[in-house]
Image 1: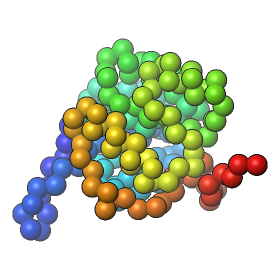
Image 2: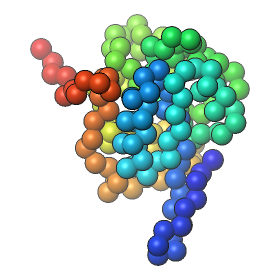
Image 3: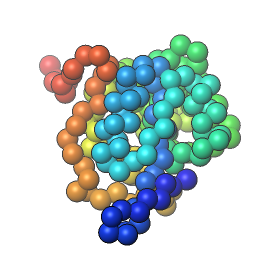
Image 4: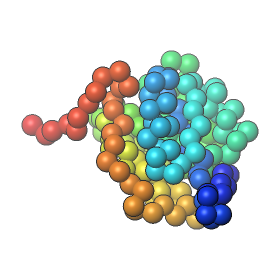
Length: 162
């Protein structure tokens, strides 16, 4: 469901709702802040059960989901979402092994990104997934190079190959 806002020039702007799910509240707040700068309205949840309730009640246009959470891990949440919704799901995780990626995609995720990730890359992936469903047109000039870190408490930089 889109959020419609009127700006000072009486133009209509549509904000797409994205749900960010991570057990680290600082991470969901950081993700929300960065994606807001790209024009998204971001809802947050810090556990799988709350995420499922928000998806059922507020119909976000996409979900960003961490894998490592205590009550229900991201794969379990992803499977539960797929029982009632085809909302686009991006896994955003620090885990970067092929078995984990394959398992997440097999659980119903549409995409998998490894933290840290630049916010403009995350916004582009959201744009692609939501656009595929015919619901979002994101302008390239809104993209800025901010980073979604691996953890909210520790500043990070892009990983280099050895």
